[in-house]
Image (cartoon, rainbow, N blue to C red; front, side, top):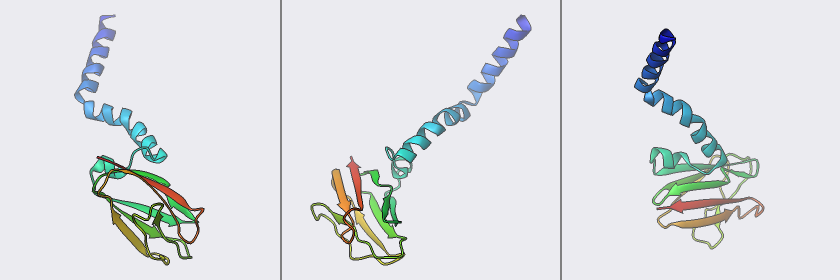
Length: 131
């Protein structure tokens, strides 16, 4: 029994010594799920003041993106037909973007910004800007 306790103590000490690895293993799937579900953006994790939304197959991806105030988003059209980006209240608006063209906008104010494609209004997206 003493040998088992010693083995457990050594194993716990090793795990405690590798806390960063344990934390990464435990939090990795959680952060991955939050990124996949759009409740957290890569820009929030890295502090990067830039983010990208792609336009492909008549879809904005991600459809919802949460960013920090001051972040610049670039929309890139990967479809083979033109699209545009228009905020519902006209706070920003791109020209028609041909294949592989892009449009960027810096979000200086907090809030929720809903947008659509001016050429295909059924295409919609949302940007949430936090402090």
